[in-house]
Image 1 (cartoon, rainbow, N blue to C red):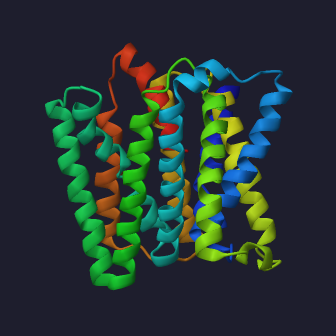
Image 2: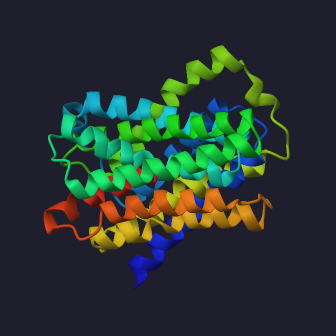
Length: 301
């Protein structure tokens, strides 16, 4: 019961990211840099407090995948945060949750996994749902909504790359992997931010500072801490089901707090998209559940 509560709390925290980012007066790359840096520092303190040490031999053996996954994580955050600037929180979230579809399509190529008839149907339904969402965005608000949805899909593509890369990182503690990925993301984003934005971060508005701290410590640090603590004693199937608390919370925030309007097409598209990704992971074998546990871990990164 405790594990379920911890995991649900982590999903609720992740579901508030879009709301928090809305109140940060910085570019998406600056926001991603700060969240990864603060999150790295917080989780490193947690790691040390648990009296654990880094396995440098394992880090070295997985170095290329850790480096590439750090790049994927940075790209994922940058495009997701940009998506929030152009479209509704609901559209950005639903576009982002297209990532599992990309993974299903790419798994036969990179992971040599068979694409079953059931998954083909789920992919078709998910694409149909996304077409409804995109069609709604074009007809409702025009160009900006469409740009936001496309940015969400690009973020989903980076997310899918992160999922696939993490499949090749084995025999390492999940918390350890996340700490290193956050460090790599921060180190890669630092020169990019300095070149594109200069020292603009130093003149950030005082109203943004509490939200930056919240994003780094709560949304990234505490969110991952609760996630790993809860995941330890949960089965892969339970993790897959409970992970849908994240988009549910984001959509609730979109409607109740941000007062963003939903259309019938958007609701239908969202149900088709989330329903298909849920169905694709249902009734899995024990071996698949173990793999799914790792998959859901990167799904909420």
